[in-house]
Image (cartoon, rainbow, N blue to C red):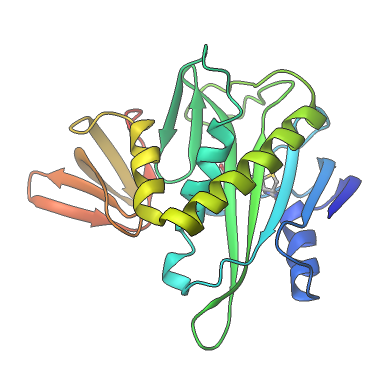
Length: 233
Ligand code: BTN
C-alpha cells in the first residue's frame, strides 16, 4: 500500500502510527515535502519539494538486536538505484555516498515488544533526487540522483523488497559481504565520534551484527553506535 501525501511532519511518524494500527509490511508513506524531517543523532533533515522522502513499514520478526541489520539492507537498496557509471561508496552505518557526496540518509526506528522481539521497523529514507541541500552541519558535499521523484520511489520500493528477500533467504552474512564490497577498503584510516570522544583506527570490517570493527593503537575495538568521520568506510 502506498500512502502519498503532499506535506507531512515526518513520514517516519506517519508510518509508525500506521504500523501501530496494524498496517502490513511493505506499506510505504511518501510525502512531497516534510516540515519536521528528522535525521540521525537528533539532526533535522531538510525536506523541500524535489527530493524523495519515504518510510516503509517492515515486520522482520527478529530479536531487537538484529534490527540494525535492516539499515544495511536499506543502504544496499539505495545503492541499487545508482547508475553503474557513478562511483558509489557505502559508509557505516547507513550512509550512501555517490561521487564523494552524500546522496541519501536512512533513519531506522523500531518498536520492540515486551518479549524483546521487533514489532515493526520503520525504514525512513531520504534521497536527493533533484538537488543536494547544502547544510552547514554536513561534513560532506551533497550529491543528487537525477530523474524524477516518482521513478526514484518506484525503484526504491522494488530494490528494498529484493534486498529484504535476500536478507530473509540468505541471512545477514550475505548482506554484510555485499555491503563491504561497496564500502571503503579494509585498513583505511578512520575516525569515529562517540558522544564527545573520538576513536582513531583502521577500518577492519563489520561483525556478524553490523558493528564497526576498528584496529586501534590500543588493540581491536568494536563500535555499536557512533559516527564515522573518515571518508573511507
Ligand atoms: C540521516 O541523518 O542521514 C538520516 C536522514 C533520514 C531522512 C528520512 S526522509 C524520510 C524519513 N522521514 C524522516 O523524518 N526522516 C527520514
